[in-house]
Amino acid sequence: MSYQAEYIWIDGTKPTPLMRNKTRIIQDGKAPDIWGFDGSSTNQAPGDDSDCVLQPVFQCQDPIRGGDNVLVLCEVLLTDFTPHPTNTRSSCVETAERFADQEPMFGIEQEYTFFKDGRPLGWPVNGFPSPQGEYYCGVGGQKIVGRDIVEAHTIACMEAGLHIEGTNAEVMMAQWEFQIGTLAPPEIGDELWVARWLLMRIAEDFDVEVRWDAKPVAGDWNGAGAHTNFSTLAMRNGFDPIIAGCEALGRKVEEHIANYGDGIERRLTGKHETARYDEFSYGVSNRGASIRIPWVAAKAGKGWLEDRRPNANMDPYVVCRLMIDTVCSDAEGAHTSETSSNLADAI
Image 1 (cartoon, rainbow, N blue to C red):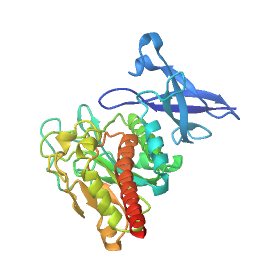
Image 2 (image 1 turned 135 degrees about the vertical axis):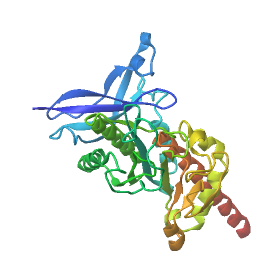
Image 3 (image 1 turned 180 degrees about the horizontal axis):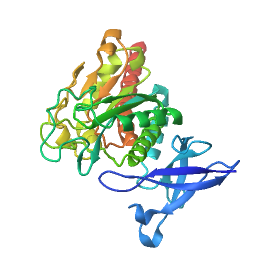
């Protein structure tokens, strides 16, 4: 017997990459291995040198086809087996390994919007639905649309063995969220990409489009983010490292904003539960801050922080790499300075 392996990868489309996939039939007893594709059709190679390599990095059961069929997330390599320039996973792995002793962990809240016929699902052909206020975590056929897709996606993620933690309707009509975590990098990025793919694939069967746009509708409507919850071992054991992490992030605002997804200026306006993209703040239980410290972390004196700035269309490998590098290198430097000070005192 043979089985189907759906190879999935991230392409080179700018400013926001697309997901690509193709099916490989594999003989029973053999595992998915490297494969190839035409990079000239995915913005990853010129036509006269178009071959790119697919290297499997994450595999799970295929909940759509069932049986022995699998989903295979791949990173893209050049034909000399070095990372392709569009491969952001490799640098995330390198950074995570460099700071592995600090045990960084992530949980990501992925927002998205359903569209059909060029407008948000359920919106009237002309005009707008009722103003925001009744949709967040709401219930009722006149307010909540797309729940059948959400339910199918949730079950699919569970059957695939992904670490999905929950779902909810969001502030704008046709907008939803699912959460993946808590996981170490790069696994958090691997599972988020597969969960995104599953959502888009399942929405096909409903003739609905999933959009990750940061501000899917202009005006007095919420944007769509990917709030990123982050902790280190030190944060999980004390409150001061959480504050230190917030301070470290505040020293590299421009670098993070530039890499947190396309259209971030349209979303981070200081309104609709956001801080401005060109300002930085943090606070306990403050959803209008750049970084929110959950009240439960403040009460316990340990836990994690939530970076509320990443867009729904962010690359999780990039965001995780930046957060680790910024926070963990700062903590490492502080530890080195403290050790040096202690040595000097001893001398």
